[in-house]
Amino acid sequence: MAGPKDLDPSSSPRALLGAELRHAREKAGLSQDELGQRLFVSGSFIGQLEAGTRRMQVEYARLLDEVLATEDFFRRNCGAAAKSKYPEHFAEAAEVEAQAAEIRQYAPLLIPGLLQTPAYARAVCRAYQPTAPEEEIDELVAARLERAHILDDPTEPLLWVVIDEAALRRVTGGQKVMAEALSHIVGVIRRSRAIVQVLPFNAGAHAAMEGSIKLMDFEDAPPLVYFEGVGIGRLEDDPATVRHNRRTFELLTACALSPENSLALLEVMTQDYAHEEHP
Image 1: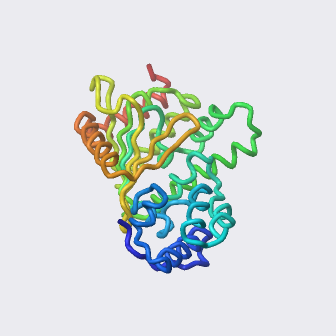
Image 2: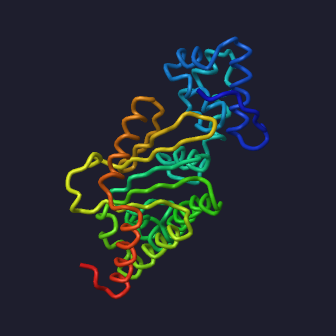
Image 3: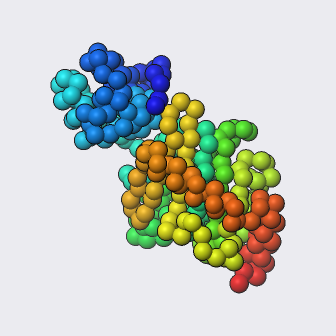
């Protein structure tokens, strides 16, 4: 469970809500577990709200006002804390990603956002919204690329990615865009900012054929797993669910090419795309 954490209420609306929630909970004489039971959530979820790791949804804000007798404080203020530059279904995951100490991800269909180039990201965003104004696509691309700044730090967070060969073979944006995208991944690997493994087609059936996995670990909060579909996303902190997905990721790393062989394959594919020899 997340322990008490000193927050600067002026740093962000979410930090203010977290500090106020902790104050109101302690004033009511409730532990995180006890308050969680009243809201039908885990005590760790309450801890994440107080730590500013999780965003406060309207339905929880209303329950908190009722249980903690705070009139409508949380309901009135959760809207400001929920404002985000990211799509609604992904906003919370993007925000907690920036606080993670370790990120492990299996990407079955496309290059993960943290490793995308501007041209690749634009091709993906345009495919998602083919009729959107160019200004809206610009904003989506800028937000996606901004997430990658967490890799500017030379040591944190740990990023370990397993990319399915299908994501590398799908020509997204054209041969030139793919050559640049794979060259970028190679550069990230050579700067020792990510561990990347390729799950090849000849690995056959594997433990995550039903979808993607994104695991996030934090210094002062319980781990989370993020599930994503078309236009939907969900963060889960249930220990059994997180443990199952962690085991699944470990199985994937066992089936995937080694980091060294993955790098060699990425370099060959980069050259193939650059010379338009992609099958």
